[in-house]
Image 1 (cartoon, rainbow, N blue to C red):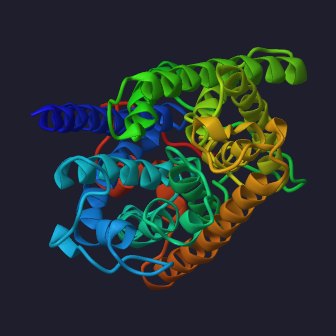
Image 2: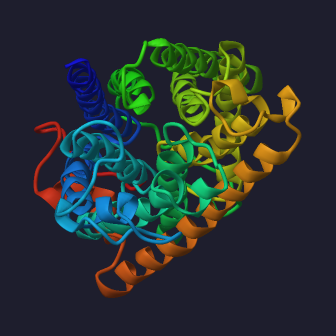
Length: 416
């Protein structure tokens, strides 16, 4: 009887967390919509909406089997369409699947922002299904499904690598292949500001994401236990986000003379991404440091992309890609064996052992994602094309791709 109650409580907790993570789709949608122009808002929201649809089906048909099914060091081979599949935790299969499917959708939707305002909708749907059904699950198998990185004791509690590094570097290679938006860069290499149309909308999105992260990270405990682990993960998540926002604002204020809200918000998201891997393995003071570094890193990441003429409209690469790496490496610095990581981090006398494992793992994932997603995008470009026409980009993808406006009667025709 006691065991039945325990499983029931764990199941309810994981399902509620899955609902939180699902609601993060709305957060991603609001952030990305706010940071782009009005003429492309319907397009980006449609991509976010269909991301979860594609992820749900792709992860049901193929992804779960590849990620958690019995197989080899590279991928699983059992559990197609959940037939004969087993739960990866002490909860029913369907509850575990829904939680993991919500994570899969989050990884896929990161890319929408990095490739916003110029990618064909049809091409995006194909990409979304492939990353959900194949690419993301392979990385997930390596780390969470008993693959080769799991065997090395690579640590990633809630997905700085599995979710955010995958999404961030898929966005990077996608936007490099796609090229910058018309008017973003001048012939001398300098960048023009292409302002988003709604900071209030983006702000709402950040608050929704911050809220949803309390399901994303604490839900990854996959059980209630005595509550102490959930509590530690939750406080670390919150402290990292807060510090990331403050340090990002302070950095941009120092560099450019104004406390830019958009950068502060991306700083909070950077802190959340960075703490996602180590949230269970570090003390609160370390979470403050990890989040603060993440907030500063996102500012310098944005500046670096502009120097390289890589057009990332919402900051997907600095927020998710760079901070996914930083959060993963942070375990090798601040992780404590007493809190569940295999070896103490460098700052706790563990030497470079865990840090080396973390570096190897995240490097392998970055390389795999760049190569595999680069191939995917190139094939899509070859057969149906990745980018809309110049005329459609100038008029806006809302009209060109969907035949409708986000704001009725507000269609704007522009040359930039």
